[in-house]
Length: 142
Image (cartoon, rainbow, N blue to C red):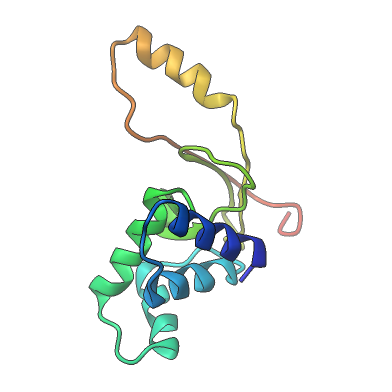
């Protein structure tokens, strides 16, 4: 696991009085050490190597905890999760996804939400979450 992500997670939990349980820490470690997004069942499979007989709800609760606080993101089109590579707080996620190899790059288009917020406000819609996924073929696969 990236030491800075682990430190950020520990600091976050202490500062906000959240329990840093073993499953939560393990799920974050699993995702941050993966080179590709992982499905919940792939995470559960890896978790079973670190913990004795974890159940799906254990993995899902840990995933939802980190997702709620933007330490991980859900890649909707892949039905998978990836650790956040940003060094700053933000909401939502923007991703570039290779159709061939499955590589996912977090894009950090931080100014984009303001454009969307303006349009959403004009349309009298309340924003609860946003995700942007752009798919194509990476340079390595071209």
